[in-house]
Image (cartoon, rainbow, N blue to C red; front, top):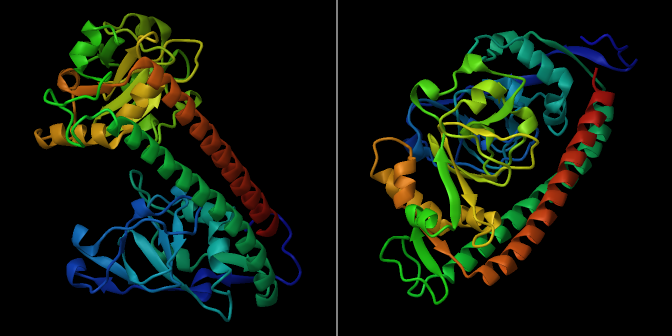
Length: 410
């Protein structure tokens, strides 16, 4: 329990008095009769909405059955704060718990918001066992004690939290819609660069008048880009014990988000002397980064930084010649469906999930006339500014909900 004084009308309950662990196992997902499978990867941190799912035929081994209204709580890696309220029947990962509120103690509309609180999540993290993938077992969770208000007060609080959740959901959906619009804008723009309809980019691609379809090597020869480099290998490869809190930022594929998010304040750093001694020189702010190993196809433009930035062996950096190609246009091309299809084609030819730099030099890039590049860059940058604004508002709204939760739960 917290050191805060418990409100007078609140009571202490064991968690198994608050919720039932619904442990209905499904041995053969494909024969479950369900249409949707929810894995831990489909749950968003600090969000009760389940927006993504897979198919039961996508998975094997034992899973759990859930019904509409059940809570799916990720018992593995609780620090990721993943749980969702099901709005449909389905099956889910066995690394989750399926929970159902006991309404005589806690209202079904209130329990999910309580489980999102620090009061619950911090306890869940404390009782997790294991080092690589810390996991909660039901027996340990069942005996945990928590303070709850009366059901009348729960109803009032649930209405407040629900209203806040609707605000964050609306902002999330607006940001998602803008993301979809940006992708459609990118695909439409580069689709106009093909004179004979959509197909895989290759040496046989017929580009529209004024456009060019060039290999990575040709981009260098014709000075559209000034550098195409991956990370250092062999004895030059920086080891984990060389990375710390000072020096040049060291960017790995895992540091780049699905939408190109990259926070240099959160990445590890490589000592200045070691970084300057690397055979392949570090990248620079403004370079376009493509992840090419294990996690393939994430794209980022390196943000402003006072120092060079070391690219890991799982990334490739492209330095544009700003007189012939803008970094926004190159990054957008790499995010286009045309380019992603090309990446997928090359990966199918490999036994590993990678597109090494030798392959990237053979890949093809669709380059628009420079005047069109500038017009497109202005449009896509405007859309990105709007999306950033929505995402900032979403983060603020979620922060306010978290503060509200901390003010309520003890």
